[in-house]
Image (cartoon, rainbow, N blue to C red; front, side):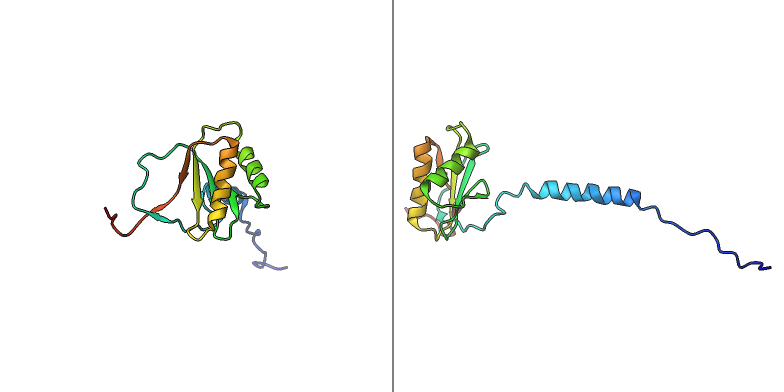
Length: 142
């Protein structure tokens, strides 16, 4: 007969509530990280001495990288010709041609790429166009 050698009941940790909390945190982080506006590429903006005082509400953003790649609302346009760019802009903008458009081109972007983007916007009927810049470090000269 064995006295005192009986094993106590196995100890269990209930991890179901921990899994629920971890899934909730994961969903929160996934949902909040999609709101980063310029995650697709880094653009170095050209400098200007003045900035716009009033920012348009919910503008359409067209970005152009230094390598002449186009992005419409953080979605890359795979074929960089005029027709593909027009299709991408029309798909994102829908029928709203009065929507403000902000053109964010890298400072080292070839001029032709900027003109192509402006041409596509003009052919689609957009008339409210702004070119994004950063404030110059030097004071403006009269």
